[in-house]
Length: 198
Image (cartoon, rainbow, N blue to C red; front, side, top):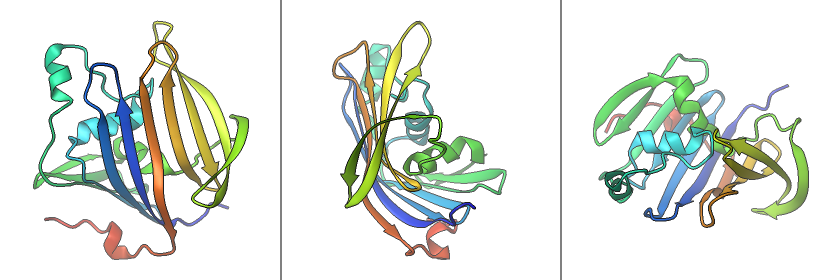
């Protein structure tokens, strides 16, 4: 039987790539049943946030041109809010006062960064403790084509992924880390996940 989610997590997403500005994105994720709300306060455009959660090699949108490297330093003003429901077809993003409607499937990976998902087929590589919780370490490989591979390491405690770390096998200094800094269960109310327009 699936666990009925009621949890608020604080996370920090950190990305380091050679030659690019370091991304440090603090965010809060609320889950109440099938509904979720993600609030990012880093100023990253929502497309970049979603790419951090979905790119095949785990590093988000990687800059390739001089202009793209400069864009890694660009930040929006204000916060970005993402609202969705697993049971609904569409969710809503509010970014700089503009409301966007997107498929829920494109928003879920960001909200699910803190969930353990199906780990049955993954190889256990160790144990640890995060936020006072016993965690199991899982390590696997991500492939982005052209023979390029990344190593994905996760520390999982029950239904939660408390640390997700991606390193590149071919580039020293390439890192993406999603770290849960706080986790509070049973505190989320309807107001936390209800779409609020600012």
